[in-house]
Length: 232
Image (tube, rainbow, N blue to C red; front, side, top):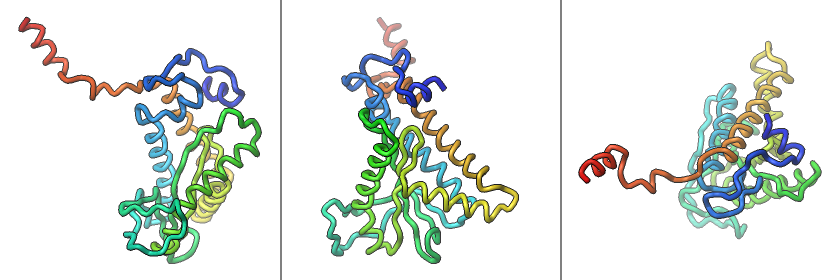
């Protein structure tokens, strides 16, 4: 838990590399957001799978990464609305917020900016990400897919945005209602621990994982290299 403590209290990370393979100076913020190695995408996918697993315990119709209905030049007024033919969100659940209606969710994991020191400032940044997600998907989901859209925004430390917090409370309440032998507090603690440990595991990977793309650099496997040396 050394990394978690250092990140929580702003202590320097021990033995952190000086530079990244992309050439940028290795800072905490860069380590958590650099796409080299694919760690941010893998972190996002594993967190999505944790939420999908929890949803499947109470809902039968749960789909991961569903493609939205085709966009046929309907009027979308938002300039940043997603008009891609193959646009998709992370999760679709039938009858989550309203009976007989699809609920669409899109996950985002963000690292707070270095100058943010208070919880309120972090929540303001999470709210900005929620508004950005809504501008991209909400209008299309409501008008074309006839569903409800909710952004699920987390920080790398496990803090959830307001929309996401409402989602987690609703999810845990329904799990508790279905399983009368389980307390609401115990389910919420277990879910938040799974989320926190998932993010912490990828935090350590972002600092210590190898970001080099060896598969693209090597033109011969090890056996072929031995044959080449033997021929010489």
